[in-house]
Length: 337
Image 1: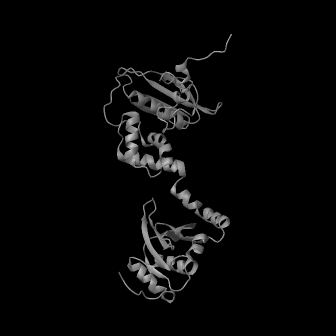
Image 2: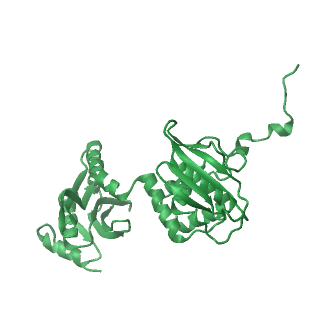
Image 3: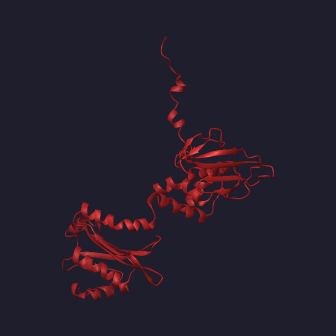
């Protein structure tokens, strides 16, 4: 018997594409379902999950897809119980999930469904489409592009679920997604000394000055606790490259808009081909005289010690004051523009 040959039209089918998810930009909300994944669009007793969050997310997603609401009756470390908002008034939908110490998993232990109430959208939003749920839905998008606009995320949620969450809710969800993907602000600041130490170890010659200050709780100092104050850094390649640049340096600052405010100070040079070269950086508390002096002293001592360098600035009062404070290293300008 000759080997089976599929018809011509079957050979042209892209089976891999046919099995691809409808929304590839979204992480599957059921990837962490250990056993008993939904195949008929319904929840089932016996569905297992790695943790409580995965169980709750699956239940919420089910209700969003069905355009129905439910009320949480009990939510504890080992139990979760919810039932339809119309329970006792024409609908007996309810679900109970609990943690199994023996299996070390979460499992839907009891389920009475589907909903028998009217599935109608009574508002543009949904009570279970909260910031935690949205955060899990948009995490892949935010991780790929942390600067993604909140309005874009709102449109994505609307396309997926048919509901329009508020701007504030999605903004909060985005912050949670960023924290889940990259860690929170406090953890990042705590890691900074290690990163700077690694930078100096693997990029020898890197110039770094990290300054901290005493932490306070109101008017009282917190024992054995310091917080970030200022940071100056420059790379050896920048210092070396400046030797072959024009003797002109432009300095300026820009505001930082994260959880903890501050100002980024930069020094920029230009080579003979008019290419821009950043040569020094600092994160400081603001454009104060002390901050600019901190930056300029390091800039002159560590990066641009040559004589006859022209500095260009917007003549901010703090910059002028800093130049005067370190006047022994600076000469008065030849002209103003």
